[in-house]
Image (cartoon, rainbow, N blue to C red; front, side):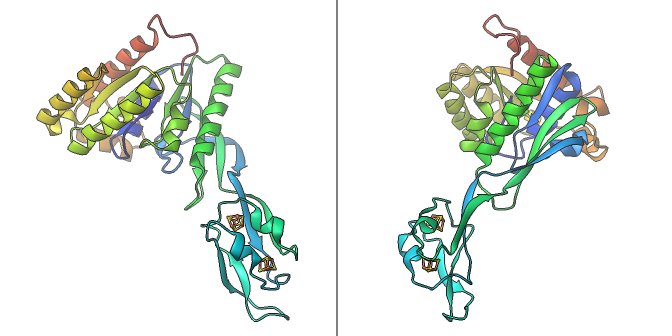
Length: 301
Ligand code: SF4
Ligand code: SF4
């Protein structure tokens, strides 16, 4: 499981290399709001399904008498008096789909049965083949929420594929940040690798993420990516990690080879053996060693 305090730390680039180095692994892209592992791994979709994270109300203008009951009852201020008219009233009420929280109260109390209420499609999820093994990934619709639910679905499905196929590892590209999606990503993980960068925000984010993994009691390793862009801050991050009893699993240098690999749609370790690729190989060896530790059970995430 690889996570970071925020996007843009190079987390996905490291996961793509891990995918190339791991044997017998299932990949899970749990960064469903900004999934980009597929850009490097070029998956062939073999199964796709829609995802519904909840329900929404919709007023049918032809049936609405504009009594205003729904607007009065909606605690989320999601009902507007700007719907189209019908033969009886000049204006009807309308549900703002972004503001609607899907509680269903309006539909329950509408005397005219003018409100449709049911599940909405928020996104899609996929099972794909990649050159490094099966991958589960997803796409959430624009401005859709409930990504925590979708992340759980991706993670659970990946675990199921690993169990069915006798694969020993689920490699998760986790959601960034510390919100609900990242909690959904790390649930049940045997090990978390936090990728950070040598900036003040990187240091701050590491502290927040470490609190989270500590709270869930998940062994946590740290990687400082692009460490040589600011060796002083990288050293401070190392010291902060040590203070929290987090193990530094490795440091990856900044190198243009990372961008060159992305352009070729390859992971760094497929693109070259030198520089950052050597750092990532060492990092992976340390992660494997930590996973193989006596406290880890077989079939680790
Ligand atoms: S409660 Fe029903 S009839 Fe009344 S305004 Fe709302 S949708 Fe229209
Ligand atoms: S379902 Fe709930 S949140 Fe949505 S419009 Fe109706 S009352 Fe408001």
